[in-house]
Image (cartoon, rainbow, N blue to C red; front, side):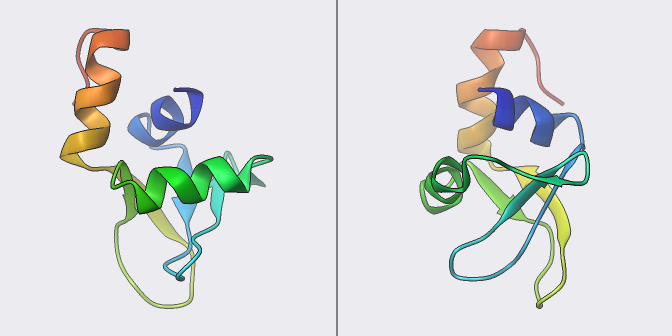
Length: 74
């Protein structure tokens, strides 16, 4: 949930690779397996493509999971 909240707050960037790496507040996420699971599960996605880091964004599924925990996610 903390990773999803960070993405929702605009604090995360990720790579567009097959196994996307997630960075929060400029630091590599310590649980890349969870980051991969969120990406492969369709909860987060890179907002762009290529080999560089791009903003991470929530998908509809990610917003749906997070909404009950925080009330409202823009």
